[in-house]
Image (cartoon, rainbow, N blue to C red):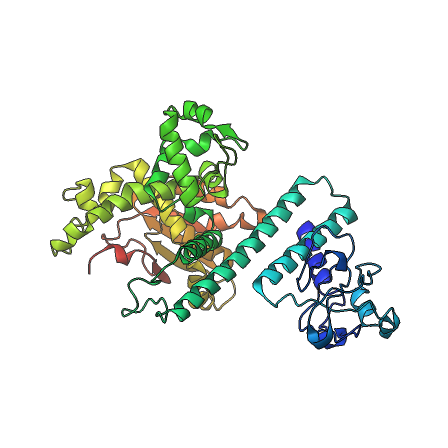
Length: 481
């Protein structure tokens, strides 16, 4: 509710009339020729407006019209501007009223152009945010509200980063043009060094842009992606760093004691994870707090399963992939995974069947990572055509279906389908209980009755005959042709 109010207040502030404004009407004459503005106007008090400057002061109590125009469009300081009575919905109308021309001729009027340059746009945007939040605090008596203050600071910080990105990319672009350098490119003939002849300001601009784009990517990907890429993160679940971290600050010393680690070792791990992956944060020197990613690791068991998949299964296999490929074999037990784990004659899944804890973690991880294209599966196959008569019930055999996440997704959409989920015994152990935990909602109560689990090795004869669909999803790619 408050966020919606913030948005509405910002929109009302920037466009009080709620429609497109013909800014040519703001060319209200005063002494000399007034400047025309082509964009929404922000007005400032003449007393804080320097000669030719676009002064946007966030502590103004009034929105006012400065006198900064002169003959030939040359800005100059004149007499004190006419202060607007208020900054309510009537402001633009007040500026446009013809009777403003009848005021003291020394009190000229003009409107600033927020889009004139990046610096002015930045000041205008920050000013707008400040006034919107000030209005909220006054309207809802939120002067002491910490949450609102945090949102205000976060929004201002976002605006600062936005304009920093814009200004620094412009600087880099100008550097490339001035030095007749090629544009950075992913093309095979693109420059090896994307930005050459770097000066100190160009080096800083490049660093600022890289950091800004990394932050944007991490925000869009979400906290789950932050916890996967680097080896330092492996130590966090291993020593239960996240589990021991409360929802408030804790010192490195206390956290090290809880994790049974040396403090200097813990600091190196946590600080690296915080700087590079936003896993934990050190808001005060020597103290640690959660971020979205570290809290996810502490509270969401799926994150632990994914880390286990990454570090225990995938990474060792990747390290031996070249060795396996060099043997030019299509056998399932000649793979990077087999070499890394010394599986002997066993393939990956046979080996996992001997290690129940790893097999369970692997199954849950597969259920999470393979959810990405479920919408495509449910939409682009004519499931609804399987049943064309009343009281019809079609059967789908989900081969290698793990814990049943695909069948559950389809069952929620197509009530006429029944499912048998087949996988190795060690994989489906506990799957029925897991399914029950996912169908606690009253709307899902009947779904679990349409899904059953059955142990089956896909290389053995299929025991279920005459099923309407045999679904093999994310299965065949695991095996050689």
